[in-house]
Picture 1 (spheres, helix red, strand yellow):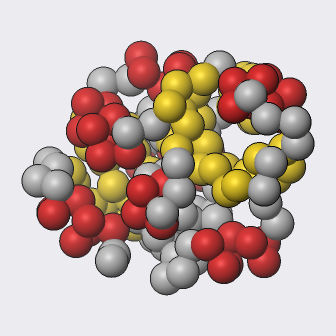
Picture 2 (cartoon, helix red, strand yellow):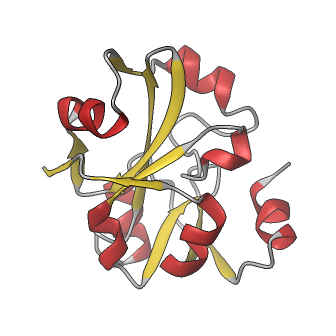
Length: 152
């Protein structure tokens, strides 16, 4: 199922915009003229053999030790590009929406995102973005909440 059909199925209010090609979450923030704190950067990790989608602000980086503690796992590593291609079928690499349920994955969000009223993220490609309320994002993604982002 594509992202917009998924959002429509759950009656989520959202706005899709086109922007110049952006290959990073910070680039997306610049293209959309919003704070990097508002843009969700998805990071796929393998935790004790299970894939988990992590959501954190674009201006932050992931602290794998803190995430390992949050997830209560022994082993954690970042997914490589081959894993991204396999898991996120139909998405351009690096433009995955941060909604694990869309791909059959659990999602964990850094608690710092909860301070945002609205969030923005790539729509599966490098030239479209989705903006929605944080309440709708939480209802849709149903993320666990952790503390694993470090301001970059």
